[in-house]
Image (cartoon, rainbow, N blue to C red; front, side):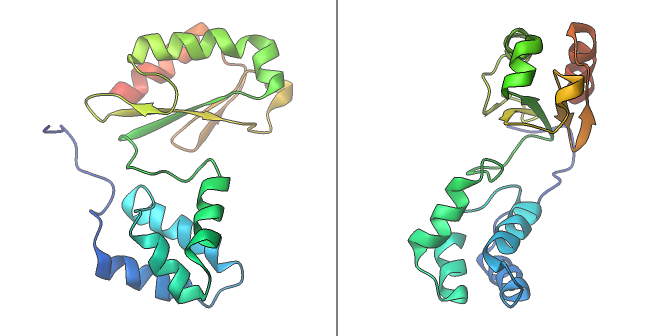
Length: 162
């Protein structure tokens, strides 16, 4: 499928992955640092990078994989051009978040955790953005949005689809 925009991530390359891992291997909390750096470069954490990181950190594959799967923010495949995260925590659900999530799924034609067919938007659940006082909330490409309602959600979806 041809996209209408420049990709914002590098394609997976084993040599580049090894370079990223080596660059961060000596840092405190290196497992998380490496996983974040890989995702920042490639848009996801490639499966092939897990044993590479484990070897560099003298950990088992299971230990690195456990960290990878524990944190919801790490992806198994590249995200779309824009990432819209909808808070699914209790405060946001109580303030109408379920209806807004359903609306976003309908407007984008994908369920939470998936990317639109044109690779423009990934719709993800997130479990608390720390904006409980302004629930329901969302985040679009790292930008926090509180007091989400249908009108604001529709505007976010439209912005992400551009």
